[in-house]
Image (cartoon, rainbow, N blue to C red; front, side, top):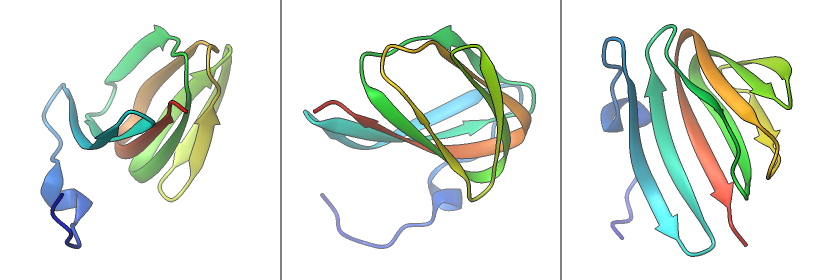
Length: 103
C-alpha cells in the first residue's frame, strides 16, 4: 500500500446522472469505499450483514434506515446497523466515505 496524503476530490469526481465508487481499502475485516452521487441519484433499499458508517464529505444526502429518513450533510456521519434495510439518495450531489466493518 502506498503511504501518502491524498485528496478526496482528486480521487473521485462527480459524473452526470451517475453514482461512482472507488475502493480505498479492502481487508477481510472490512472495507473503505469512496462514493460520488450526482443530484437525485441513489441506491435502492437493501440490507447488508455488517455495520457501516457513512461519512459525508461534500453535499447532502437522505439516508433512510429502517424506514426512517435522515438528512446527513457535509462533515456529518451516521451508522447503518447490520441487517436493517437502508437506502441512500442525493438531495444535493454528494461524496461519502463508507466504512464497513465485517469483524
